Image (cartoon, rainbow, N blue to C red):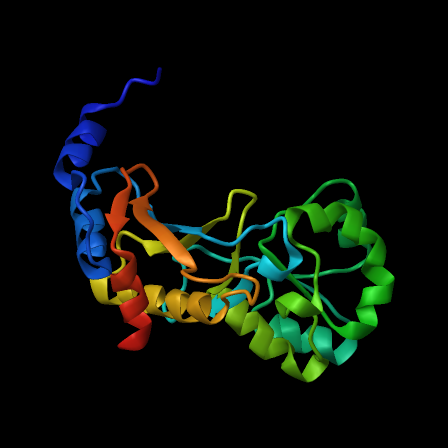
Length: 237
């Protein structure tokens, strides 16, 4: 059994077993964060969806107004003027044959890859390397875009375009900021997530979609959030 440190035990005691409003949960998470690094702030939501059924899959994207607090490295598959536009728009890596060979050797030191449609036939073989890591460009995830939209796609990824998807246990795990963000910034990001999540309720899910929610920092205890309070963030947005 893992022994819990004094800081963690004190945080658990302060959190208790109460349910908090989203605003109070954010405030408490910032208050009890006592690590010597800027912890991530995460939301974990248990849904009533069954991932085994195709009509109950949860998938969406939330544009976080203040980003996640994490530097996002963007790789772009493009050529010619579009590649130049991508570089000027802040792309960290413009893929060439050397980069493609590195990817085939297992390299994946980037967070998002974006491609123009004409590149997909050329990089299709990379799916076996990038697909399992969730890094393969895909029209469904908004990472295959026309050349004229490359700048917009890069900016969205850099700013904090957060993918919302459910794991095999029907839970959605999301990082929506860092402790050094203000309470207002974290609330804004959370509102964006909830707006996307509520609108992403699968047609196959009947009745209540969201069951339980917990907010936590990287090394902090879980803080129970009142589901109605989360849903009201959308209603009051």
